[in-house]
Image (cartoon, rainbow, N blue to C red; front, side):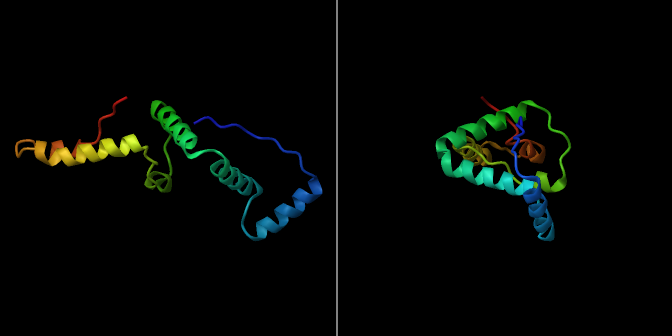
Length: 117
């Protein structure tokens, strides 16, 4: 996912005071601004457009090899589109019928590893 850096002018004295009091609450100006932008995005951008944007972001991240992530970041599941959920449900419902005893556990572990466009 590509990122864009925003520049905002703000009086230095006010920023110093804001950082002083945010430090006491273990908060940062940058994180507060990011949270505000995320909330504003969800409030103003229609759900269908957000779903489209998120699917494009997922496609872009799938095409690029991801750098090693922290364990906490890997535990959080990615949001799935409706099509992905439907495909997963279809695969899981047909998988037990298709599996034979000859296939064994190795075949079962590889289910859900296919990708289609």
